[in-house]
Length: 179
Length: 189
Image (cartoon, rainbow over the protein chains, first blue to last red):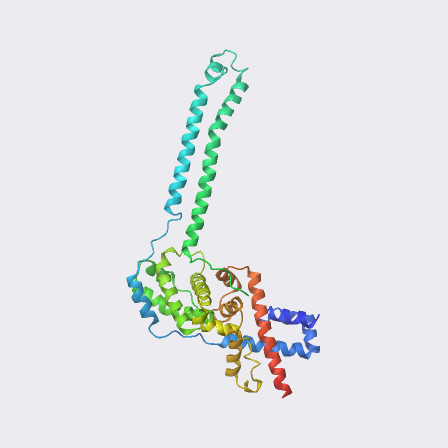
């Protein structure tokens, strides 16, 4: 184990709980005075950082904040999703449902030969059941597709609304500070 | 910082300013300390603490309790503080902080013979901390002074927990290396 590795391991463990049980590291410390000095310095740094009292604000901070709070409105309790997104989601869903219903209606009124009525009136309806089912499945697919699109858009709008709601809870994160 | 009671938070959320005064009195030292360690300027830190506490009042109804209150509050302070820091750095002529940032970390190495008392040693170590880049300084402050866990620091600073550990280790290593160096110099004298 090199000095560099030992110092990094010591630095990674502010409570020194793990390095105390590392036999290889302890063996290195026993024979390396520089790393022992580093370990002592690390302990001194930790002690200094822990012992530092909090910086105290000026007197009157609480009074100033409370006085300002009495003039400021309390934020309204947020809806899970902001109103514009709820309305957008509702409009898209409604549009999808209406589109689906219209498609189903027009496709049903312009059925080719082999429509459900003809199929059911035909004495040999059992033989044509599979044809009827395939026709109905096609119509259903035409109607369901816009509905699925509507649901996907609704979920997307709701997720976007939720993110906006989350961001409103906290101030915007600025650009990451430089290292 | 001790977590305020759910009852106190509920009363504040309902707009009870007396309860809010009680809450502010219990958190103000931690908020100010974090602001001061971030900005390193008393006036700016005081303004930031006041802004953050007022924002706390405004935003409390949106606090859903998904994280600890202290984590949420520190995120508020840090986010506002980083915005303010960026603004301060855009105005170099008015900002003494920029001058201080430009000064290399020489606190411990300035005069080894002066490092006699524990108090002096602590002062010099914190002087070194103040010279660290923002992110390292914040991690040190949150860990040692605000008593946050790795996970809480990760949540506050929006960084992975392993990055928090690495930042803390690098900062400690840098500080200990300087201290070991100065103690070595002292031994030689």
